Image 1 (tube, rainbow, N blue to C red):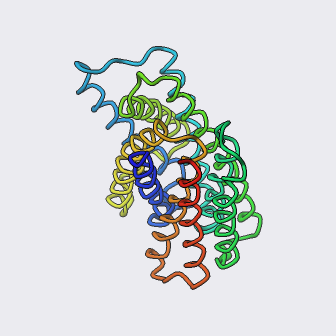
Image 2 (image 1 turned 45 degrees about the vertical axis):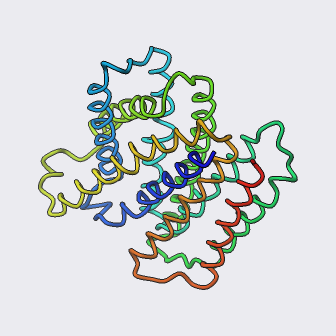
Length: 300
């Protein structure tokens, strides 16, 4: 259980990076598109996963057609579809509000993935603390206006769809891994990665910027570095860590651990902005942490 908890927290720390990556580039008209960043990140993930899988073919096996189909479906929910919607949301609504809406994923996963033998009364303290932290952070975060109001609400719609995608992925992925204990976390991460990489390539060919346009931009080294960092760390390594957590913990506890993604995303945002969190925001982070601890206690 301890290994699962630590793996889930580490995955959250790596996932938090994806919330600030779009802000490090010139996104939108005249810059990189949301599809460029999403496709670049997952192309790196797919290429690395393919290399790792091919290097270990002597000791590991290829997926069956059913396993490949499951990886393809879950890759759209948890990776390419989720992140594309999130990047679009950050473009339209900034970082803070999308981060907080994604931060409600633990509540949904916990409610939908509660083990049968676990009483609701045992979950209420963790749920209440997490919800209080989210509401307090929402109240204390000032949303800067970026463009017309319609863009902001369009961003809210994008991040809501993104939240639904990842909530569904978290529940289905955990259930699949528990039914297929013969598949280890690294193999599954590689299969997901290859499926995601293929989807990202098709997405870029269909709607991404041309290769000549990409290579002509002055901030190409930054773009490439962000694709590498989020593709290797926030996708490949984070997926292995999350699969370890999913195999060892219930879906409801995994859901609560996703709060760490919100905490790290806010931390990285504060660092990028050069701002220190206000006292209310610090209290909100404490409530998040207490919510995680209360949930872990309830699942013992």
